[in-house]
Image 1: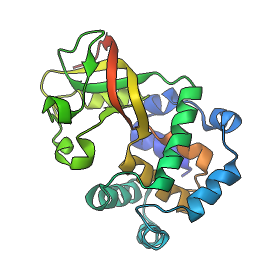
Image 2: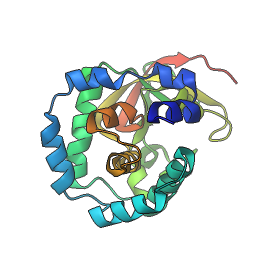
Image 3: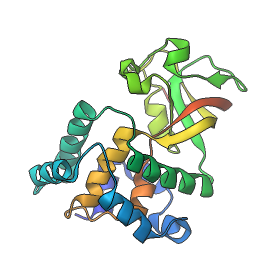
Image 4: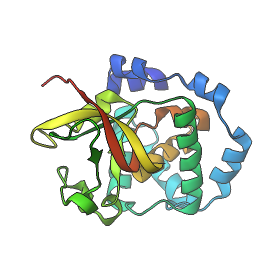
Length: 222
């Protein structure tokens, strides 16, 4: 099964079709691919090359779903710290592409926030509807996504009561979710997935910002 087919099966055809094509990103990528590749190969990351390769060896021969679960569980459990310098630079490149492509940003969370009001991080509100924000690194950020279907998932009762989906304008610094970046970096290394760096940008759907202003309160299915 191809990577595209596996992702469509795992995430749903409709969600997959909503994403911008990786070829479009390849044409408009602002930094030469060789520069990113050198940074990726020789930069310092929270996961060392030996750790990445050991984890990838564990995943060889697994189905796409099982491989994804293995990588995700490992990253979510062990690598919770802030972005390292090389990770920050990769994150900057990804965010530059997102801005260049004119992404629309969404946030799913607690309801009751009105158009024009700000969504603030847990460090300022004391509200941690998903519990994840108890981690120190997540206290100071608001999570956003260019994928409405993904953001709306965090407005469901599974994560928060009286949740709501919003279209937002990020404020302050925007970065890739560190664990999301680290997860997909494994995909670049994995020879069974064969993901290049330009496609990596397309696949990343979880970002964070210092705060966000609500532009629209979105209707959503319950």
